[in-house]
Amino acid sequence: MLHYTKRVIIFLCLRFLLYSLGKTDEIFLRRTTTRIDLIELSMAIWSGHFSRRSYCTSKCTREPDCVSLLYNMANGSCDLFNVIYDSDDRGDADYYWVLENRGTRWVPESCLALSTCSSITTDGEYWVYPAVTNQRITKIYCHNLATEPSHFITLKYPNIFIIHDGSNWILQRKQCQSAIRPPLKKTKFLKVKLQIESMVVNGTDYTFTSLTGSEPIQYGNALDCNGEHFKDPCPHFGTATIDTRGTGLIVDPTIEFGLIKGYNAAMEKFHRSVNGDLISFTCAGWCGLCGPISGPIRVKHSKEFISAADAKAVICNQ
Image 1 (tube, rainbow, N blue to C red):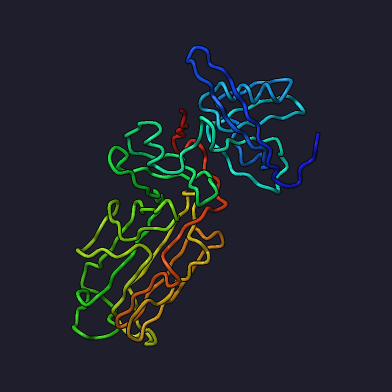
Image 2 (image 1 turned 120 degrees about the vertical axis):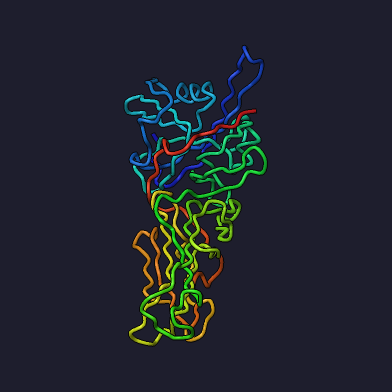
């Protein structure tokens, strides 16, 4: 058996004549390297043993929902899956085979592709494989599948962004007030819209938000009007919390946050977790608006493992 230290691109073209349906099912599989801990054997749609790998791949061809397989030549075990788990060139398992998006079976790159190939019209959490991510498995909430499909990230933890402005002053035009006139304007995002072609967040879509006060604020921003940032003591109430734990995604580490505009204003208490899945900061000024300053918020995959059971797999077939 050849030893592979890097991902080896080998294509298998498997054709199986389905006499009962009168058509040929053609799939292409590529061999890759991964880690066993990245694959959920308990989520296999079929498991068994074959003396040859070709029998395992033939079984995958006959299973319409098979898009990846694990064949261990040492013991002949064959496991078929309806999702494509992540590869890892540093892994110790070089017997994982994944579907290429050509032939008569493929995985959807977007909610629109999913709806078109399957006629599914029920909104929900689905696995899609965006082209811009090199088709990595991504959990997406597909919205408006029956009409104009769009993409959202479901946020498991509070993502809250606060506006403190003149309406919150108890004494007009007085800086550094220790109390506020409620309410602070809070925008809590339950889901945030995503442009799947670029993985850029649409922070001004408020479809899945909970609002306190009449004015929403863009995802990732905070505004404060309680006093010049260098005054001390001077409390500031405009805060932002981005929390993507449980999504498998993080804000791209290259995205910088800071002061967008303001008078004697600054971003303070900025924190980004080691994993990158939690970002928080306070905006201080008279007034000051803080948020992303190097471009729109873009997300990328994190190292967090998300179970295949957390979303629905849809396989496209001609």
